[in-house]
Length: 184
Image (cartoon, rainbow, N blue to C red):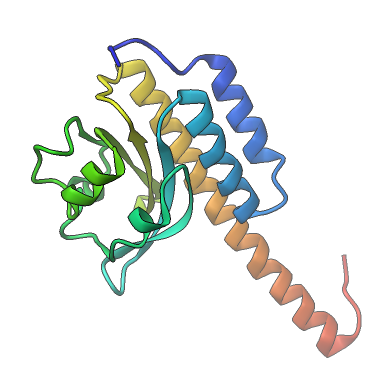
């Protein structure tokens, strides 16, 4: 793929609308990975959440990739696309010739030529990653990279919003169980 803009304002609006109209975090994440895969005509997309205790990225949802690829092993924060934790996108233009991947042979076997990994950040902390897997080399334009970074930022806000809603609902249910009533 040449360095042309693939992400139009219309794609951005549709992604934003799909995220805002989702019934929950899982629904939003599934819609996002499916839509990005189709709209960008790439192999697949995975949304990871960060597990700081294990120093690993855990798959939240994925689309377009085989189970064999997804189950290849734990994704170590220290070994796989490390610069992500510097809050910067990471571009792997050629998976068969890089030292940035933990499992380069699995990527080649899966038919992945390029990977774009974006940090999902909230309140200054990396809480996950959004990875796009391309069937061919993608010389991504600055415009598209900026657009993808905005998507990743929105995902971070949506993830934290969903967590806050879940916490609020738990508190509400506890108060209702203890007192039998909820004051609006």
